[in-house]
Amino acid sequence: MNHTMNANNPITEDDIANFLIHTPAFFERHAEVLTAVQMTSPHGNRAVSLQERQAEMLREKIKGLEHRIMDMVRHGNENVLIADKLQRWARSLLRTRAPAELPQRIVAEVQSQFGVPQAALKVWGVSGDYAGHGFAQGVSEDAMSFASSLTAPFCGVNPGFDAVQWLPEPAQAMSVVLMPLRVGELNSTEPAFGMLVLASPDPQRFESGMGTDFLERIAELASAALSRLQ
Image (cartoon, rainbow, N blue to C red; front, side, top):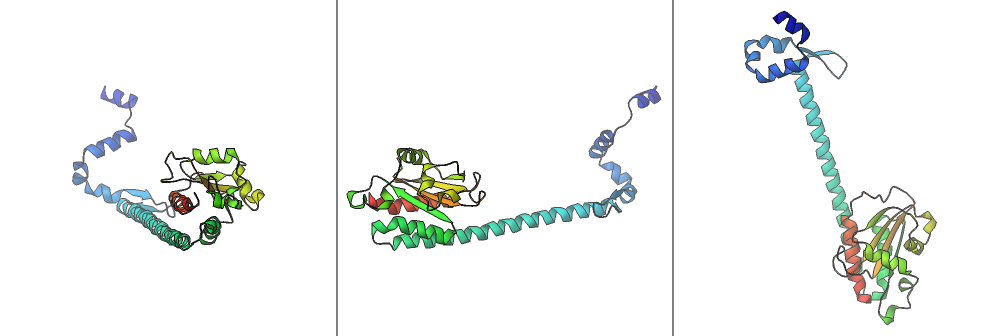
């Protein structure tokens, strides 16, 4: 009867694995099994012992951790470089005495410090002393509404925003960043009083999933500086 049951219900690999997991004393009673087990190495398809295979797996895990650490170090170094550029950019704003020079200084330094091919900036609602400047003219109602609707920088492929026309060569803007300029924090509900546009001919330079921490800092610093025009 037992023979019939075994024939109808053969032992599976899962049964064996379950038995070994729940019967650790098996290997104490049969230690020779551990040394006799042969496995195929992923490196050269040669037979290796269980201990050798475990050592290989450990080396692979260590190598993976080393790669992760190197990535963390690399990203850390990149962040330090970006922070240095941001500091130099902010310093240039602080050294700008004439408020009317700020928009051009912001644009020029963004391009210089961060290697941005194109940039443009417009503000609205400025005091009468600055209303005649180019940076305060040529802004559509749609652009103003769109800027106020943003609570974070927009990054991605250019779908044809009005603000892209502010750039020197709008046809070359394949990917863009649009940053609202407002009093206070970028994610507040305050209406925007301006917008900073960055653009690149590379459609992957500014992607929708990219980090925006430094872009937010740029927008908030630019907003604080440009509040002198109000």
